[in-house]
Structures are given as C-alpha cells and as structure tokens.
Length: 77
Image (cartoon, rainbow, N blue to C red):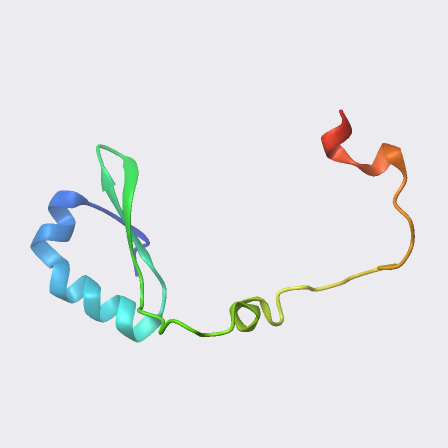
C-alpha cells in the first residue's frame, strides 16, 4: 500500500484509497506538487483515551526517578 499520493492520483482512485485506509488503518498523505497537504485516516470516535494510542510505545524506561544533569538537557544549548 502506498502512503503518499498526488492530488491527481487521489482524485482518480479516491474510493480505492478510502477502502485501503479502512482495511489497513494506515493513513495516506495527499500531496500537492510534492508537498504534503492532507492526511486521510481512519475515523476515531471522540472521547477515546489518548493514552490507549501510546500504550506499548515505550520500549525501555531506565531510572525514571533519577535526577537529570544540566549537561543532559538538549534545550540548554
């Protein structure tokens, strides 16, 4: 499945692309002259817990209670 299509490709294959998004759950980016302009993705009901989206995304978390040194902050540079 493609993850990016041009506006002209989208116009010609919109129903097919909608079905692909529905079945796979993967969004499609529509581009205009190579620049992303629109994202087509599966509808999610409002009120769902955003933490459910993040569940399982943290692979490893070491030392969550240990202090962070000044030299470890990227924003201080």
